[in-house]
Length: 265
Image 1 (cartoon, rainbow, N blue to C red):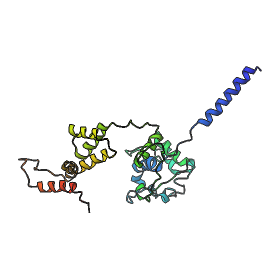
Image 2 (image 1 turned 30 degrees about the horizontal axis):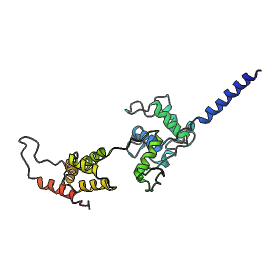
Image 3 (image 1 turned 45 degrees about the vertical axis):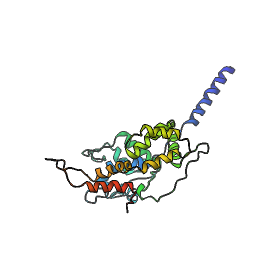
Image 4 (image 1 turned 120 degrees about the horizontal axis):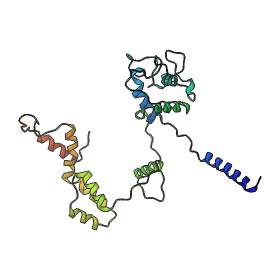
């Protein structure tokens, strides 16, 4: 066998090992983000909190029940063993009398969703409590010593990196002024305000703009309209003769409450 052929075989084998080593590990399936919504939409109607409509004697919204037996002797979920899990057996059954969700159900599982549940069970069927009931934990702020980032920006950048996304370019000063003025007052900055901001080269120039906007009567007017919309406020009846109502004192009170920074309590 020639040396050239031996070298070719060696390189081919080496490439195979490199490709195998470079294969990313299977991504862990997130229960709260990917599995719980599926169970809620497709399964909770018959296997959830409603006792009157519950079937099979088990619940898929409660961990202890989901990993139990229900009315049958088969275990609903067997971590790491989808082939032993009654749930997987039922959602993949070709027998219409056993298949779940039943044929008459409006919400059916797609092949991709079934495979997602199967993979979740194969990965160990990791169960997480509902996010709203979890204890509050202060996360560690991602470290970027070479960047002057606020904690919020650090978390945003960390997620962008996870998604292989690049952050947008830093906005110029005119854009920053326009954004904050629209956010706080609902109005664009005037030419005089733009000139004043551009000529202010101090380190607190932006903070001074924010303070000025928060002290502007336009701030209360802009913020109040969200509150008044939610309260279904209107100066007129809006129907028939569309006559005026003497409700403006409430409108003015809401605006004043925002401008005076009245606490909710």
